[in-house]
Amino acid sequence: MNHLVSAFFIASSLFLVQSCSQPPTSGDTSAQTEHTKGHGDEHTASDNSSEHHHGSHNHGTTENSVTTQATLMAPAEIKPNEPAALMIDIQDSEGKAVADFEIFQEKIMHLIVVSDDLQFYDHIHPDYKENGRFQVEATFPQPGNYTLFSDYKPSGQNEQVSVLQAEVSGNSPATPEVDLNRSKTFDDTEVELTLSQPTLKAEEEVTIMFNLKDKANNQAVDDLQPYLGELGHLVIVKNSSPLTRADYIHAHALKDTSDGQVHFVTSFPESGKYKAWGQFNRNGKIVTADFWLDVQ
Ligand SMILES: [Cu+2]
Image (cartoon, rainbow, N blue to C red; front, side, top):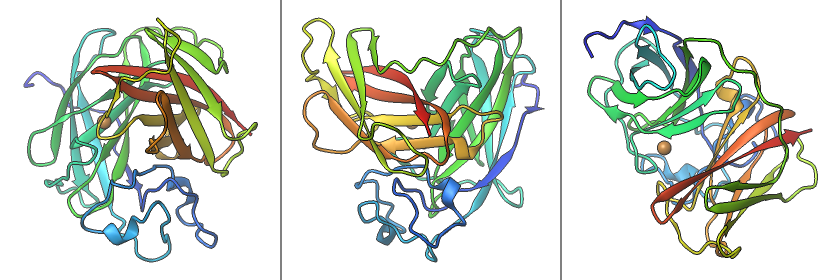
């Protein structure tokens, strides 16, 4: 740790008010772009549980919004495929360390790492040290720019998402074309994506359905286990530059679907190309299934 250079990339502070998977009710315009995270029903914070009734929230007046900021410290040079020790400091709007956090979805911080061309995705869990500081080792496969969405919950506050950026040395590879194929194989799992709507439209609620089959027998998988407390997690990032908090969507799986079916309800803030990564736990092995989506 002591030969870390304090290379500050970006400290980003964001208002993340009440998160939910429902579109905001009419009359609420102030927080529309932030309404991109979904909660499972059991994901109920003890401090403000009255706001969590099956996704139908009142967005007007009861929100407990807070501003935090995150600072990323990384080695002066990050090389491709070499583990890099990262530290993330969380501070309040006055620069004071935020020291107390709540565990949510089984972890104290969720860190989503994507390459800015959305080819690479990783979901890792930094350890909390003290005084607002988190540590994690991350490996970046290719040169280029990366964005880190750091998701955490200061005690007694709403979930926060801070956006950090890192650069990996070298020449970044050419970006492959956007592939809108809805049927793909990921190791032993065949995944087919279906949508409740023929066309995805901005600000319209949609159900995104992952249909998982075992490659060996072509049958619906029957070995799904909870992953971070739920049947699956879905992260969606809008293809844009630079990536911001508004480009990040996190949805939780609906309950009680049949074998091999994992469904998510979400909506997209605006039109564009989005990359979606669904993550599922097949008996201890995490399957990450990625698809591009085109939103009109
Ligand atoms: Cu996580």
